[in-house]
Length: 456
Image 1 (cartoon, helix red, strand yellow):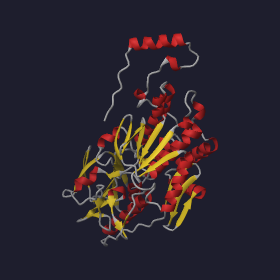
Image 2 (cartoon, one colour):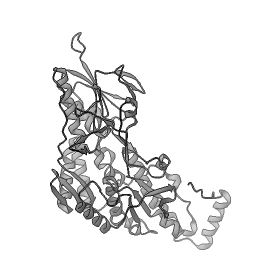
Image 3 (tube, helix red, strand yellow):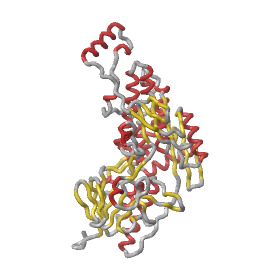
C-alpha cells in the first residue's frame, strides 16, 4: 500500500523457474506481489536425478523462496492452490481465498501414467525432492535386499533396475545408475557383485532422446550401452506390479521400477474452464494470457504454445523467458500499453549420459557430444544454480565424485525398509551349518513368514 492508494496486486502461483523470474521482473514495478507455493523452496529440477542417485544432497539444489525473493515488494505464502475463479478474480487455496488484479500460473507439471494411475505405486517419477529421496531409497534398499537374499533368482530380481521412458530424465537416471553399480558400489558389499546389476531403459518410440537430432540420439544410445545399460526401443509397457514389468508379451522380473515416460500439466489448469491440449496444458494466446482474460497469464510447463509450427518446449530456459516476458507485459498493462507477443529464443539444451559424456544442441545449429558437451553442461548448470553456497557445494561434490568415483549421499531413512527380505542365518559366513539352521527354525516358529503376494 502507498498511503491510502491500493497498489496493483499480482499473485504468482509456483516458485519454480518461471514464477521466480516473474517475481524478479516486477521487483521495481509499482505493484504488490504475492507468491504462492506448496513448498517453501525453489528446486533446481535439472539436477534432481543426482539427488536420486546419491551424488548431491537436496540442499545443494534448492533454496528457500523467501530468501531468494527477500527485500523486494513480495510476500511469500506457503499454501496449495486449488482452483481459480476468474469471474470473481480470486485464487482459491487450502488456506483461504486470495484476490488478484493479475494472476500468473506457473505450477508446472506432474507425472503422467497414460491412464494407469495405479502404476505410480510401483514406478515413482521424479519431480520433487520427496520423489528423489523415494527413488534413492528404493535403489539403495535393492542392494541391501540382494545382500540378504540367499536365493540366486530373487537376488537377480533385486539387482535388476528398469527405467521406463528414454527422455532426458530416463536417460540421465539410467546412466547414473549404471555408473554407480559398476564404479561406486562394488567394494561395499561382500555377498553380491553390484557390477553385475542390470539397468534396462525402455522406450516406446523408435529411439532415445527423441527430441534431439537423430545422430545425437544414436550417439547417446551407444554411450549408454558402453556404460552397461540395456536399451530397448519400441518397447511399450502393458502392465507392472511390485515384482516386475510387462512389455508386450514379455515379462521382466525386477524389484525396482522408475518412471520417466510422460508428464501431465498441473490439475489447476482444469479449473479455468478454457481449452486444454492433450497433456492438460492451457492453450495460451501469443501474449501468454488465457484466451479472453488479459489479467491471467500461464507460463512454463502449464502453457501450450506453438511457435513457427513447433511447440515451445517445457524446459527451464523457456519457463524463465516466459516469466520475464509476463512481468514485462504486466508493467506495460499498468502503463496503458498493449501486451506484446512472446517469442522463445532457443539457446540450446543438453542431456548428460554419464561421467564425461553428454549430448547437446546450441542455438539450434551447433551439435555437441562427448566430453565437450559434458563440460558445457557442467558450466551451464553451475551458472543457473540459485545461491553462491549452492554453486560451491555442487562444484565440490562433482569434483569429489569425479576424482574418487564415490557417492557418499547414500542415506536410507526407512521409508521402504519393510521391502527387505528376512535375514537367513544359513546364508551368513562364519556360522556353523548346525547353528544357522537352528536359528532359522526358531525364527520360523516365532514368526511364520507370510506367503508372497502378487499384485496384478
